[in-house]
Image (tube, rainbow, N blue to C red; front, side, top):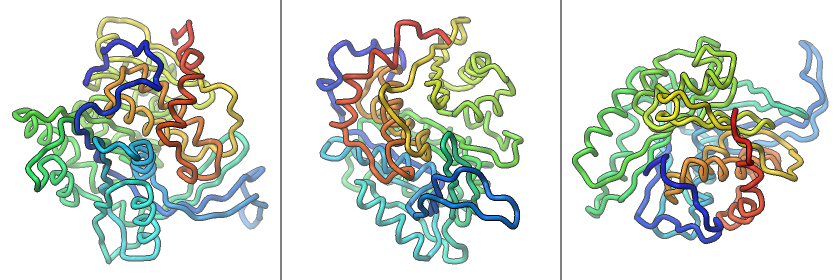
Length: 365
């Protein structure tokens, strides 16, 4: 897979999908989301506010990405997805497992009966959202819980995938995973370097509640191909307020490139080679004619679309950004991060209409 492959000129409806057997394994956080909204304002201490709706659904950044990819892969016999995380032995875990099964994703959740499944209260407003989280079992997720990943690299039937993509998300929700993650990724790449498996790795940290933005994140970035932060995460990790400067700093830390999602302002793309050559980042726009209902999970949906188009379908960096933008836009059309996930057909239809607008003629950041 290459970020430098030429942009597809044929309509995306005709893009060749997963010409080789492809597996995507997603590692990271898994929560029960309690979604409250829309709300007009946050409650004050001792006060109350009215929410338009309160519902519970499977969540966690990594789980959201996995179910998004699984839904896009549905009906594609050459592509598969698995999710690897840690949950408690409780009713919340049962909900998460049912969601994975319904979304065409192999359930590789490990169970720790000594702790509850993580839970996140999502407060959604007109223009943004906030979170209150107890990481629960996700906080104990460690490298030793990830043995099942190797089962998809070297499956029991003896036929490894031609392409293997690993996505790691929820970094700051997984304190037990952080110390050994860089080494784990390095060893995986070393093990596969002598095989015919084409490995790629993507990474999304999500928010650092401590606002320190460290935890070994830059060591992990050295082992990944693509980094997919939002603008808050990009500024926090790069220590650069200007997003163009942040894109250049971060792109030089990874192997291939980065995409910074910027909400209604689209996204900023920068490839490692371009950053090293002093070339400016590129900016994309959001998908047109979208009236958001709920922003929850839009960034995770972007990751799903990008990974599906770039890692699974073999598209270019720009193709991935277009698919990510469309998936993010479609996610905002319903309440919750994964209540109404697009199929590949729905995605293709929106891309065919929105591609030129998203990429635009003036893409300089």
